[in-house]
Length: 170
Image 1 (cartoon, rainbow, N blue to C red):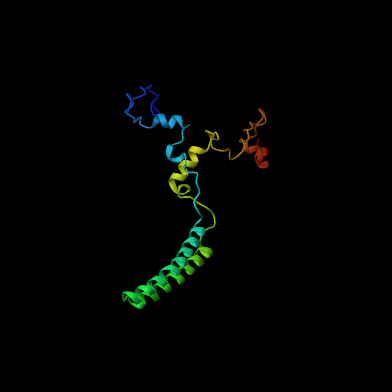
Image 2: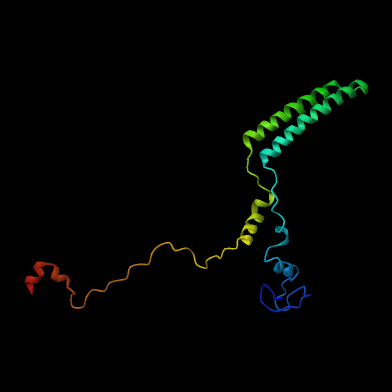
């Protein structure tokens, strides 16, 4: 195994490079996985889209209202809970669920984006998983410049040659 920083050959059990003191922990696993860190190996699972999650949350609120409101009504009669609590639960769960579904359908994205596909980690993952060979040079922006043409020898003209009055003085 070689140090990724300085290239010094290392013992398999070395924790640090003997030349530059670079930490060698995880380097062997990194090399075995083809240069892909372990945290990126199994992160290809997609989660539900924000819209779908919102619809599910709203549906669960409404379903919870069908269970919780009658249960609170029974408890308010039996234990003496305030009836305002039952009314509040009914309004919050049914209307809240409906509004959550409406919000999800109007304002949230349809695309399924996992948490691992956003931010800095996603950009590092994209760079590491991209197997195309990058060019060492920037892309060409223009063609080659034209060559400079030297004037033919013997065709030089004096500035006085351009003025007819100067020619007559000669």
